[in-house]
Image (cartoon, rainbow, N blue to C red):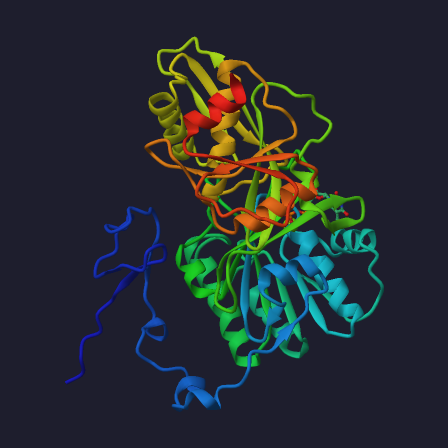
Length: 445
Ligand code: TYD
Ligand code: MG
């Protein structure tokens, strides 16, 4: 007797399985994300290439290929990887296509065969951009299509595949519009399979949602090897490339670019970008040294406190987590007697960079303290330190490196935790403080 086939539905968003179809996934609440699971989707079938077991010593070295852009190599940990699939996300207009095309042009000039598939632009649009980026005729192949099978067919005899973008491609055998969870998953799955089968380094450009997440199912980020985010304030020329996930290297390096008339250029002295040297000594400005990956960056933190007309004062943070701002305001009020209760508070990092580094807490607190008291901080002073809930100033990671950077940028004094070891070889005056209150008293009274 043959077994009756049971239909199963899988949520493209969270992967939950359901035996009945419904318009909404019961697990994650996503609308229109349940799709019938095909037999070939079912787990449990080992891929042929992995079917034979091997010892660790039989596994070959990872082959890397320079991207032709040093900052991109730095973020990727040494270049594209054989068979590695990279997802590149970012706001529209930030420069994703420009970055990829620049890498494609550079590699093609080095003799590599690169296929750039665009589902968003016409050949003349891509060619126009390529011309602007000084491309010469050679090994760079263009294909403008939204059909994933056509794109993958064309990728059979090239060495690199760039797909711009995963949300505009569609598989004609599946339902749904391009960009729907099912289509995104299927398109990505096909690209990954080809990449692994041919050892083809592949990059998938991805749109992001209004809240800054990769558009499409969360599964997409699990499926690929590397997730890169290209960000930055579009009103400024500077762009920051970060990796959120990297199966082949660490995730802590960032790449800093400037958008110029001729494409993206590396920024060699990032500290200068995030520091407006020309500004006068105004209340609400404090300098700090943040650490991004292995790079110390001198950055300018700005705060503005303004009497509020509202019952609940407004707090706005750009470049800093809003919860962090709430926390630092609470510490300032309870531990340094500086209340912002009657003020709207705005905090910003100059240059459009954002950071999660706790080593800049003290600089943020000092910028807020300076605007509340309306007293400027001398321009030759820089701050370094994490601020705890009891108002203590704590040592930071890689302090010596940051102190040297502050000295290189011309600061005369650096205020930091008393318990910091410091850097003896520097001439910059290193001032240790126990608490935030002490730092405020020293600089603003
Ligand atoms: P683009 O790479 O198309 O962004 P995305 O693919 O992320 O949507 O373009 C980014 C912006 O950069 C666009 O507004 C035009 C601008 N640009 C320059 O300023 N200089 C250049 O050389 C290029 C190619 C683009
Ligand atoms: Mg684009």
